[in-house]
Image (cartoon, rainbow, N blue to C red; front, side):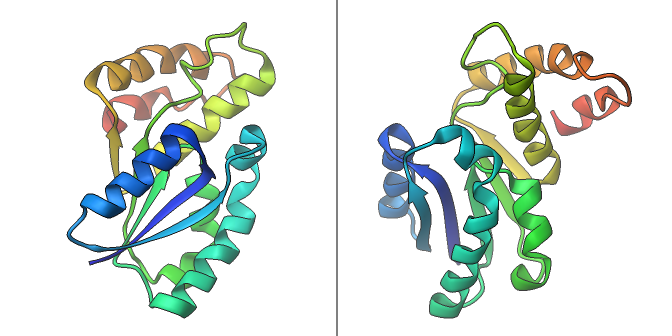
Length: 163
């Protein structure tokens, strides 16, 4: 299979994971990356320029059979921009870390929005993998609190389906 790994914050452990996946995979893996800087911008706005990079990768390598994005990407936004380009290729999300439980700060409105990006990415993905069972459980345990911080229509009815 032709796999595009989308890594908009390509540094440190994020980079190690993506490159490790590529080197261990039996598939044709193409990394589509941005520099590992400005993590909040990569998370919230990087999907726009990442969509352009995916289009260039399609020109060079052909359409992917699957897209595998890290949780540092607004996957819902990206898929909205690439509907026609991906021609129905499934999208998987790898949750290396998430903004619902990390960083564990005082939960400002901006931080809540970062967690919302992770949540909507899970909703948009065809498949989701977490880096550990502990991490998955922590995310879903904290998610109702995040969703309660919004004024109405909080999506809580979708949690179990996504879990």
